[in-house]
Image 1 (cartoon, rainbow, N blue to C red):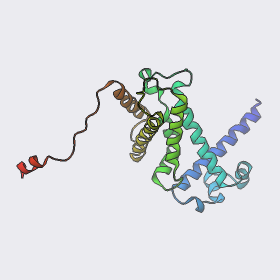
Image 2 (image 1 turned 180 degrees about the vertical axis):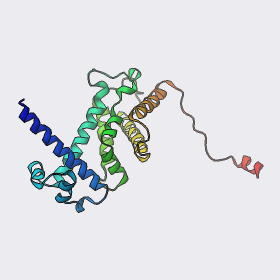
Image 3 (image 1 turned 90 degrees about the horizontal axis):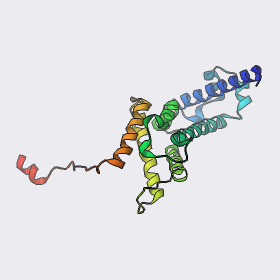
Image 4 (image 1 turned 90 degrees about the vertical axis):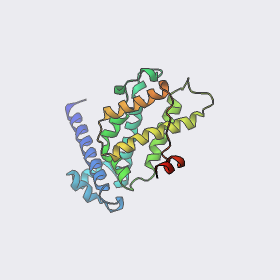
Length: 212
């Protein structure tokens, strides 16, 4: 590709990236309906002509921002088995788990959907994507035959989202590597360790009476 075309492509990517980042930042401050094209181009340091060269309206910009995130989510989830015919969980390493790097790359977007009412239902969409990837990409050869695969895949998807949710609510206090290592430990403990036994938090009535 000639250098001039490559330069144009980079400029287009930079412009689109700036508009999407501005949109997400503004959506964390106000309702989507209250954001104008002027707000977007001013925040991205672009002109209106540049905006309309790439998008019909702000709805198309938001749709592309969401699609970008979902495409990257799918690629990140598939990364551990991208070059293999199968995935042996026992050989999985923390460095091979890329979903938390994905969330960190799109931290502002994920914080938006958790901290505000923007994009309602999007967490369910994320879980549905992870569930479908688990069902269609991965064969659970050692899964107990009495376990419903669809229900199990849904359980796994919402468990991963639960970790992501806690991470976001904690202002991303941990690194993506730490989150990946924790997920791997949870997986290994399920495969290798004894069942977890929960102790009831309620005190025995007799014990309580004896201390009164």
